[in-house]
Length: 83
Length: 207
Image 1 (cartoon, one colour):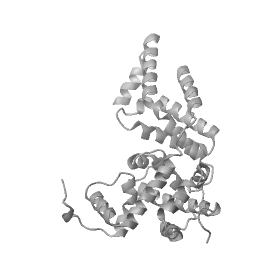
Image 2 (cartoon, chains in turn green, brown; image 1 turned 135 degrees about the horizontal axis):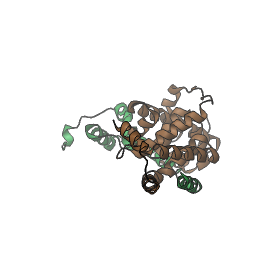
Image 3 (cartoon, helix red, strand yellow; image 1 turned 90 degrees about the horizontal axis):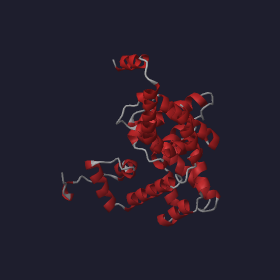
Image 4 (cartoon, chains in turn yellow, blue; image 1 turned 90 degrees about the vertical axis):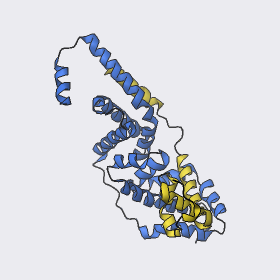
């Protein structure tokens, strides 16, 4: 279902900000997403905010590197063998 | 019905060779399905317990329980969510005695965090560079650790581990709306802490 830009209802900054987290987590769908994307095209403040939240999220994602689970993997595999 | 069947089945004497074949099948199935999620679970255990020894113990306990109850796992459902659930229960059983951090956060303050940091800097890009580029991994980690547990959990699961809202809801045993609101608050709290670190480090000006 394609919506032409003319039929998109403008939303307030307050409304836009309430959707930011769903948006960056890729949980915003359909009309709600189209409205927000449209708002972001025209509102610098909200656009910056989204960028900021995205940045924080990707910064956190970087903490998830190089976990040292090899040792415990071996341990569990050994235990399973003994079951 | 199913339980009855299984029970009966276990009562029938099975030749040893056949038994070990079933065991082998179970093990290879388990290894193929459950072991690939070990890193994600270990990472979470590490962040939840705060040290490697406890994290390894918790992970080991989780996998042994999962193996023992493997026939209870419904094939085709979300295995990661199932494993997380087992880990959560193990964690609660193990650490239940410990008191929870009191929730003394003033949310009204937090709500305005983004606006206040904007006010500190004329250039948003510059501020973001300072705030995220300048902070060390250790500082981000300890900011995360300082969050009340309920909020820390959802932020870790969502932002670090990449679980979906649905998986997180299953893990914390609350509706998706709760996941959303905790994420919302958790992220804002985290930003507040990061902002404090950035100030201490002189990355952004003091008041």
